[in-house]
Length: 342
Image (cartoon, rainbow, N blue to C red):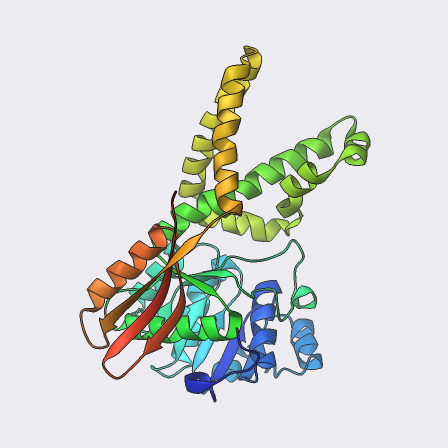
C-alpha cells in the first residue's frame, strides 16, 4: 500500500455513496491518498461530519457522483440494487462502479438486468468492526484486507483489472477474485454463520439467571466468540437475510458437527471428543499458519476474456489472491499467490 496515489491512478476522481463504517473508511483512505473524492450519505448529520473531516459531501447523490471516474456503493444491502441504478444513470459510461456489500448475488443480478456488467464489479472487503458510522471509520480499517471482486467475462474484465490495481495500490488489498455464487457460499461459513453463533452465545448469556456471574468470568474465549454480536443488529439481519439459503445450508453442516460433539459428550466418549477437536484444531492451525507461493500469470490484453476470468475465479476458489495487476499494451500481468499445502 502506498501513502499517496501514483501512476495510472493519479488524477482519478472518486465518490463514495454511503459513509458508514466501511464507506467512511474507504472515503477517508481515498482522501488521505490525495484523490479528488466526494462522499454522500442520506443522513445530513453524517454529511456534515464528512465535511468537518475535510471531504466534500454534496446534498444529493447526483451531485456527489457527477463527473467521477469511479464510485463505491456502500449503503445498506437492501438499498444497493436501487442505488446502483441511480448512480449508473448519473455517471458516464466509462465510470467504474463497485460495492462493498457482504453478499454478492443479488447486486450482481441487478447489474446484469440493468446492462451494467461492463463497468460494475461486485466487491466485498473482508474487514469491519462491531462499531458503526463515520465516527468509527479510519484510514487504516481496510489496510491489507482480503477484498473480494467478482469479475464477469467480456468487457467487464477491463473494469476488474483497473479496480484490482487500485485496491492493491491504495489499500494494500489482497484481491480475491470469485464468482458471486462462490463468494456467497464461502462467506456464509467464513462470516455469516459466525454471526449466528456469536448471537446465540451472547443471547443465551443475556437470558441466563447468572448473567452477571457469567460476564464476570468471561475471558478470551467468550470475548472472541461473541465479538461480532456487538455489530449493529439491523446490519447483521440484512446480511443474514441477503444470504439466507446459503447461511441455512452451512448452519446445518455446523449443527451436524455440533451434534457429534454433543453425542460424544453425552456418551462420555473421550476418544471421539478428542478426535473431533483435533479435526477442528487443524482448521484453526491452518488459518493461523497459512503459507503462500507466488504464481505469476499473463494474458493477452485483448485476448480471450473468458479464459482470463475462469483462471481468476479458480484462483479465488482455491484460496488464492492477487497482489498485483499490471496492464500493458499487449499483455496483462497478474501477481498471484496460492496456499501451500504440506
